[in-house]
Image 1: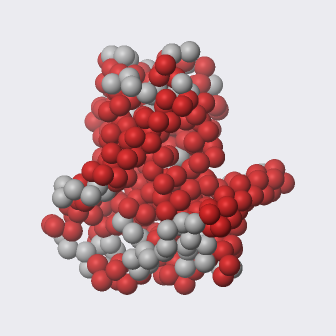
Image 2: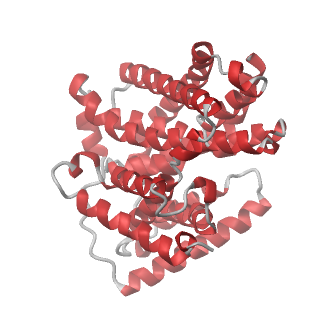
Image 3: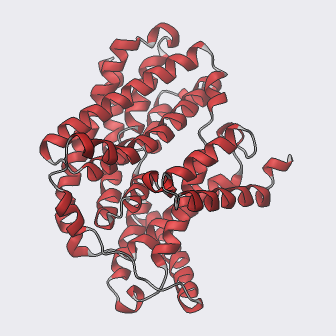
Length: 378
């Protein structure tokens, strides 16, 4: 085993990236982009310099962070949820998400007309288009559902290359959505700026985490994960993350739980650790190794996501003009619920955390159907 595959070493580098991002976010320029974006960028640089493993040589540590850390981070953040503030955010989020899903489908179809990927990818292009439609509607569950239907996972190099391109574009889109509110507010002022401030949870004044709270939070996180896992076996059609989220919301309404110190800090720390791995998966060398096919895939995917973004921003702006909400919804489409939650946290829009999870779940349900529709149309 190489030194860079050593779990302790990789953890140390990931934590170092979190420290650097936290420090950089305190500077004048760093405040403009936020720690979440900086974590992704710093870790992506480290992975592409081969200081830590990336997507093509992923290690079990990364899988564990995706499987355990990401869901538990959501659980901790939900312990701060105010149900009254969510009610007003829910319907606009769903409406925007449906707009974003339609824009994803149209983006794929328009990118197909512009790039003509079938010239380099042949018959596989249709399946890839369907897979990308699925994943940019709701996440990797849809990506793999379509791949399995056509046995695409057996096409090793092309399948791995498609995943590599997906990782790169998804990471870049996180960066874009973090900057959308800053850029758009300057050229098209948000008509919901005051409302956004009103619904935002007031500035955090929670005390520093103490031993009592840390022990209880750790127990609740592990216990909720275990209960959710058991329930998902009895109710396989209900997504695991939805069960875990529901437990978090219910517990948040118990005064003894809501008084525990540091749940927000702990949740945000774990979210940033998850985002660090997202950055590590942004592997540019894997795309370039495919040469002409890789270039075609990257262009096709980038144009499709860009068209999704333009359409979602323009239509969302006409109806809502809440740029932070629009950015979060677009991220829920392209990156999934967990990265959308990270955006909500970065924007301090805590009333949008639960809606982000719900629309992410909706995307899991809708994405596969839209993916198969695209394969059929092409």
